[in-house]
Amino acid sequence: MSVETTTGSSDAIGGIESAVSETVARAEQVLSHRFGATIRLADPEHLGGSGKSTVVRVRVASSPFSLPRTLVVKRYGPAGQQVVGDAFVQEAVSYQLFTAFSPEDRMCPEMFAHDGAVRLVVLEDLGRAPTLENKLLGNDPKAADWLSERIHVPVVILPYSVGGTPAAHDLFALFDDTVARLLGAAK
Image (cartoon, rainbow, N blue to C red):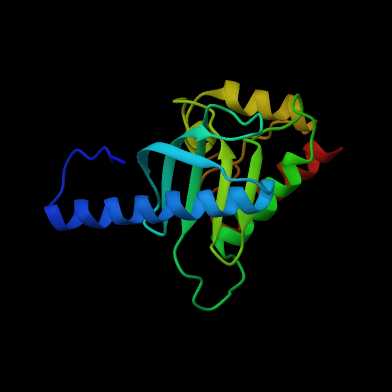
């Protein structure tokens, strides 16, 4: 197994390699348990993460099932206290919901397996495209239009901050303008 790294101290690189190796090993266990047969993963590529998670692209080396050629594995660190807003729980539940949609209506990668005790999700690899975060926070209106068409909700342009629109001249007006725009779109 090799891990692609580009910069950083040898201690940081060793920590990344260890996190990636552990993530891949756990993913093999979770997938094997989920499918009831041994599934082997290879060629991990560290994709980064938020600091709270390790994200790895892996090749499916062997599987008796028809899995995609590559998968993305995301493993969160220890839960500590379970709090409202736990990123792992939110992500796992969201993928469970959206994976139930038909492939044409799905707006995210398919989830193949997850494990709450290990805090890990195994997802369809969408390739080297921009992330959902990049698309939603970017300046390209096509992303908003694409999502709007699929979930049948109109696109609403909201003021980003006070002064973001002529009507949002103070904090109270920002709130009023935002609510008015959302209610207007709901009609």
